[in-house]
Image (cartoon, rainbow, N blue to C red; front, side):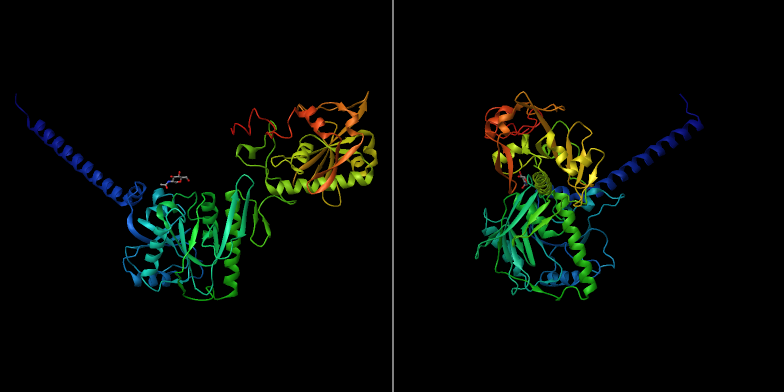
Length: 503
Ligand SMILES: *[C@@H]1O[C@H](CO)[C@@H](O)[C@H](O)[C@H]1NC(C)=O
């Protein structure tokens, strides 16, 4: 077979093409490889390969005025190869001029859409076994400070997962216990006994050292304010922090030089704190001096849970109980309504789950979402607010909203126009010795009952005051809910969400 000149040229051209393709693919492979090498630190760390030593991680500083470059210099002066990571939400502005060295890095935590996610994760950059969280304005005075902290942490095996060194030995740290209950949406700080060295939380300025693996196994390792966020998360894991007699010096005091900058910093801190507690679902913070701070709903905000489906509020599915701000508002509304009923001569009694709560806890059931009162139908006209509610909703002088329910023949008093937490008033009338009514809800407890339970009504402790209840309320409750109901708590719709099965 003879090959023509044309065929020959064609064959050569194909061969050259194949060669080019081969080189292009080789080149791509190499680029991919290099990229993989580049992101290796993160994956390697996830595999558990961390180098011995400490990384200094600086997270708490203000963009508009800070001493971060001085802090970094003071640390690398002691040990030039010390890894330092400055973690900022976004590129600091005005620009932060850090010493230029491969071991000093700025990490931006806010993702940019053109970069892989790993780039924005600080754990990609922290490759040592230990990490020291260093606040702005701290000066390293000797190489041994961090090393001693590591030694002390190793010595505290199983007792403390973190160690802390105060900044400025003249300002000792305050050692606190911290109990966080997500179920009750509450964080409670209490002063630890004097001379305690193991604490749940600390107040004051400090350098905190812990295992890198522990820090990055928290839910949100670098949320702000750093210490508040860390201690809430660590106390949920039962970790403790040990205060050391190592201390650091302060570079500049005060840290912020103008009162305007101080004001800006205070405002930012406050909004970070509010955001943090909102994100964590903590609506009530009790401080060590007994003061309470609320981060939940109030008169001016909507109720903090949505419409209830199948008697099971959304928070039960989250394994939480009624937010404490809602319990507080329900107690306040109940007390207010009961005062008005008593003053206007309307006979009432605690009904349903509300009576059950009073019998069991002398309070609301901790997962309840409204208050139920029974009233005598014939007494309704005695109360002007109820009379007026017949013809439309009435906002009274205290901002409570009185209305005839659209769902049937009962009345509802709402906490406010915005916040629809409410007390329901169910009018009953006697008929052949039984108390009956015209609107029935599809609830086991919503049944007729003998009038003798109301003759007489008896006082019962409820939500911090005395309210009226049916006499022999144990039989009354067992008639409505079944035997043993006081002793055996259960969620309102156990088929959907049961306390016992924990489903
Ligand atoms: C991370 O935390 C979870 C629970 O919070 C724990 O079960 C797990 O062992 C931890 N992992 C490491 C590597 O510490």
